[in-house]
Image: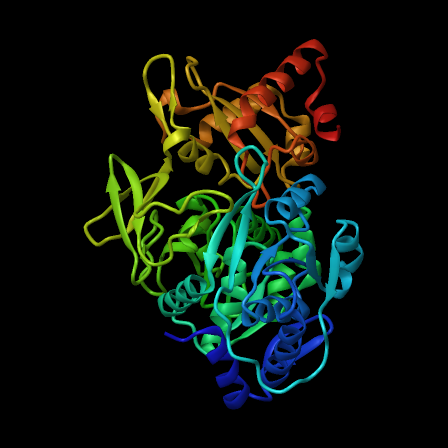
Length: 496
């Protein structure tokens, strides 16, 4: 199996003058990449084993990430979109004293009270031999907002990237457009590792990634049209935004696209099909950090709507009591400061496999709603239906132990005006129409609206736009009680 150091050396010889990565400041050829990684790795050798990494999506961030691995270090990305409290928790949990920082992140790194290690910009021959012990600790935001560290060996990341490159038919003709933040494991693998293995190229668009991190991803259509990529990875909210922009402009996605993976959260089949009608080759996938990101994905030319595809080569997926169970070489080593991971890994997700091995996701085992009539409802099912409406950016369904379901809705920028003037009865009627194929007991009969900024302020959303379910019952009750004490119009609510 190809490893990172071999890919760097091979590409520096075979593709020496060809661009490997590019951002707003320019391009980095394969030869320059190898040289810069070598110098940076040499500067890291004497530093502690665990090193933080802070920076925007850029050529410098790639150099820092690869250099850390080449030097045999455990790299711990520090997401800029995490709160200061979450960032400090990461530093304390891993006992990090040194943070590698890209030029634009140096000041932010200093504010964390650590030693700042700048990314060097020079040339120093071939990379040194890969040291043992390199890897990554990925911090997920968790259901309550307290980050939890997932420990992965570099060999596991390499294997996951190799399997994904094979499954997606990656070639050196590919141009990957990176819009998701690099601290996300999926983006590290897809924007850095897969292109290196395939001798392909990656283009970073800092402005777009910054907008995504702020939860304001307008301009996706223009960004993709500007760069003409062949591949990319998006979360469902970004896909919906892109489709809405194409709808509004009457345009189609670039014909250069051959594969766009959609992951991070469930995507409704209707939304994926609509994306295809706009020229976006959306391929649903499924994964989790504990399994080194991707577990299954729809392959080019083999997509089966309503599923997340077949397992990556080398992974085994089973269903036990309705729960998805994964076994294979990419299951994490364990949680930071926790026990080693169990094999096989019980994902906590509900699913089913069809006769051809395609996986269908049914929801979270611990999210299952049982209403007071004993009816079972997977909230993800209804939420996926509701968010097919372009007026709705995010939705959470509640109602465990209650006679009916309730919905917490975050309007999209495109739907804000409609929600500002619509009555509650009109919104409920719209929800009923959207969910017309669901049984009556699964259609929400109550709702509250919440502006996205307010949802962020309340810490209700994870970085990829999913709700932190553990916080929702109290938040819903608080918002509803406040509205009953001080009734306001929808327009006043949305402008708050």
